[in-house]
Image (cartoon, rainbow, N blue to C red; front, top):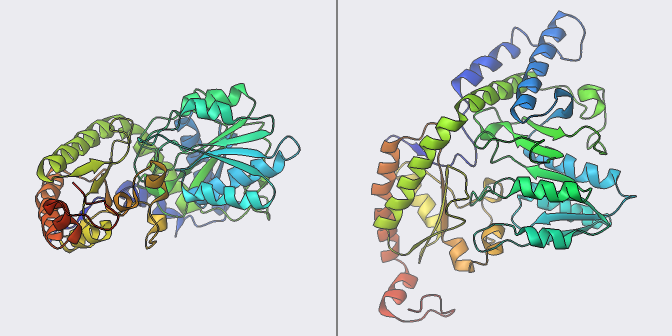
Length: 400
C-alpha cells in the first residue's frame, strides 16, 4: 500500500539535494567551525554561505542572523531576550491568543518575572484586528509578537501592517514565521520586522536547526551563555551539517516558491471543493482566502478528529488534528477555541497540509477514501443518529 503524507505542517521530508549538501560535513569536512586550521575554515565557509543565503531571502544583512536549534529556541530568545533587555523602558508585551506554544509559553514564563502580557483576540476567521492592537499599546509596551501564519488553520496575519504600527510606536516587533517561511515571500525591511524566527524542517531541511533574525540595533539579551560562537550571541558548537542543509533548503525554496504556491493552492482548492461535495455537514476552519497555500483544516460534524486520523492511517493516509507539538493532549485546540468554535467542533476537526511531493492522484485518493471513512464513523456515532432523528444530546449540539 502506497502511503500518502498530508501533514507537511508538522514536518517535511528532507530534500535529496539538501541531504547531498549535508553529507560532506559528517565525514570529509567535519571540522569545528570555530577553529582556524583548514578543517575549521571549510566548516566556517559553509556556515557563512548558509547565513548569506537566508539573510538575502528575507532582505536582511548577514550580521543580523544567528543560527539556533529551531523555531522554539528562536522564539524564546526573541521574547525573553528583548523583554529582559528593555525592562527599564517598560514591562508590557502584546501577543495573540492563537500563537504557537513556543510563543505563549515564554509569555507565561515572563509573566512570572513581573511582565504584563496582553493576549489579543481574533475574529471568527482567525484574523487579528489592527484596531485591537492599536488600543492595546501603552507607554510601557516594549514588544509585539504575532505569527506570520498559523500552524493549525493556516491563516495569514497582516504582518506588514502590524510592523508599521509597532514601528510607529517605537515598539519592537517579532514574528514567528516558522509556518510561512519558504511558502510566502518575506522582506523584513518592507514589513518592519525587528525579529523573525524560522525552522529548517518546515521547508525540506533537517530537524534541529533554525534561525533568528535580529535587526541591527535591537536591544536583546542572550538566551544561552557559554562560548564565542555566533559573535557571542548564541554560544555552542555550530551544527555545520544542519546549517549547510538549511542553507540549501533556503536556496531551493526561494527558487521554487512562486510556482509551488500556484501548484499547491490548486491542489488545496481541489481538496476543499471535493470534501464539501462528498461529505455532508463540513465546515472550513479559518479564513477561506487569507491562508497558506497548503492548509486545509475542516470540522466534520458528529465524529472525533482522532477517529478520523486513525482510520485514515489504516488506509495509508497521514493527516493530523492540529499542532504536532500538542499531539496526545485531550484539551481542545486553543486556536479553534480563540475563533469561538464550540468544544465539539474543536475535537471534530482535522488538518490536511500539502507539500512539495503531493500529487493530484494523492488528492483524488483522499477524496475517495475519506468520505467512506466519515460515513462509516458516523454510522457508529450516537451524535449523528440523534442529529438525524431530531433528538437532542445532553448539551444540545445535535439539535436540528
